Image 1 (cartoon, rainbow, N blue to C red):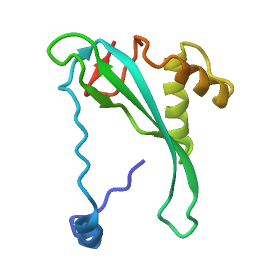
Image 2 (image 1 turned 180 degrees about the vertical axis):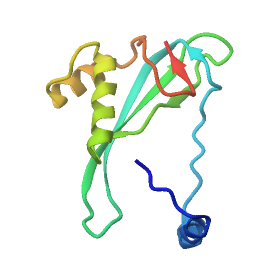
Image 3 (image 1 turned 90 degrees about the vertical axis):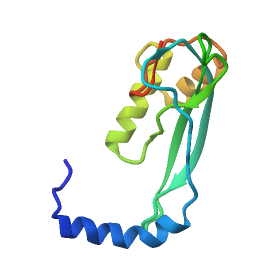
Image 4 (image 1 turned 30 degrees about the vertical axis):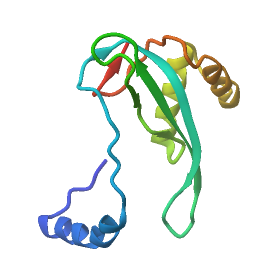
Length: 135
């Protein structure tokens, strides 16, 4: 659960972020307007990142890429949610994504990732958080 903070504390946190904010590059990933789209599963970007705290804990991440196959936006690609094992909640969302994509309970992460990657290019009924929803 998020902690409620005072306006003054919020402003203090905003000020503390300013230097990093100035240095970070813009991430403008294109997303279609909210709605349902017929898509194919195009790719699964994977990698390893680390926390910015002193522990520098490493975690894996997955980012699905979809291509819209019908309508005015046919041929456009977009990235789905960012899934990771950074904490228990994020790991549960990652497992939910894998189970949705393979259509059954996920038990062995490595095997399920391989089966999902092997089906790249196939029409996949999937839902992502709005926007958008792919079917």
